[in-house]
Length: 180
Image 1 (cartoon, one colour):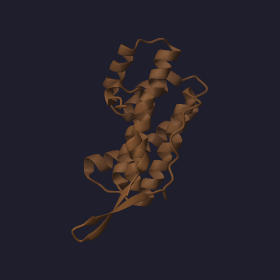
Image 2 (cartoon, rainbow, N blue to C red; image 1 turned 135 degrees about the horizontal axis):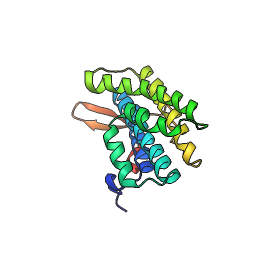
Image 3 (cartoon, rainbow, N blue to C red; image 1 turned 90 degrees about the vertical axis):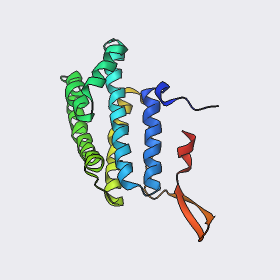
């Protein structure tokens, strides 16, 4: 069965496939890129939370929500201009502000890598992928108790050794990545 085109996937499906890519990047020792992808996954989780609040809880039309998400452009704006204001005065307000602070820290790392060309070591990447996993799971479970990201296990790396012109080379890989 062919994969569903990315543009046709739901927010949750996009979260899942980007998280799988995050894990694959980390397992292949692409530590800086794993942080970037973790931040993308966090932003997609925020999109899911915003859509759920506005559409499912308040009946706002999807086309309007799409426009708001496009105009907000970026994690900080989506949090500050959309998600946090929606939750002011609710039981989730305080926790959401704490989540926002954590995700903004992750996003700063992403921006330093993407816009300044910085690199990150394994320990730093592990810290931020773990942070992303924690905060994304909180957001997703708030709206769907059955959803959980694939658990990040930093030591879980797989590789394949293949012949090359100079002997053999070992290529790290993440086997579940191709299934998504």
